[in-house]
Length: 167
Ligand code: ZN
Ligand code: FE
Ligand code: FE
Ligand code: FE
Image (cartoon, rainbow, N blue to C red; front, side, top):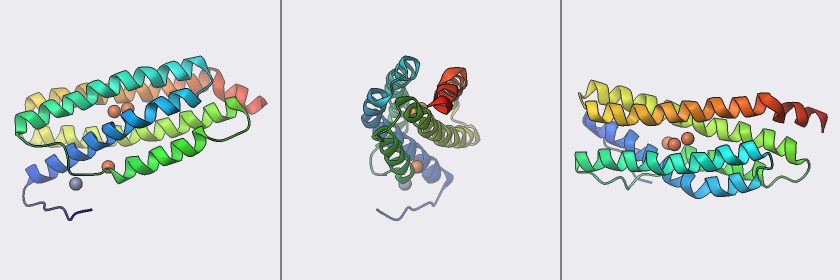
C-alpha cells in the first residue's frame, strides 16, 4: 500500500482509472469460478457472458492509459478484493443450489453496483477534463455494467428467488 499524491485533478482521474482497471483484472480471475458455482443455466450464462464483456472493459481502460501515456499498474482495488471474497464465500456454500444461486446474484449485483459507481465517477471526471474519447469509452462500459445489473435482477425475479423460497 502506498500513499496517494493528489496534486492535480488528473492525478485523481488516474487513480480512479487504475482502481477500475485493477477491479476488472480481479474480476477476470474470479468470474469463472462464480459461473462454475451457479446452477441455474441462465445465471451461469449471464456470468460467462459478463466474463467476455469484462475482457473488453479492461481493454477499453488500457486504451485510455495508452492515450495518457500512463501505466495501468500500481493500485489494488481493496473493495473488489472484499466483494470477490464475499462472492467466493457464497459460491462455496453448501446446502440448496437455488438458494445459493440467489446469494450469488446478490454478490454479483454488489460488484456491478461498485463498478457503476466507479465508472460514473470516472466518466464525470473525463467530461470535466475535456477528454471526450475517454467519456465515450467509459460510457460504453457503464452501460454494460448497468445492463449486467438489470439482467441479474431479471434472473432473480423471473424464478430463482421464487424457487429459493420453496427450498
Ligand atoms: Zn490509487
Ligand atoms: Fe466491469
Ligand atoms: Fe476500488
Ligand atoms: Fe461488471
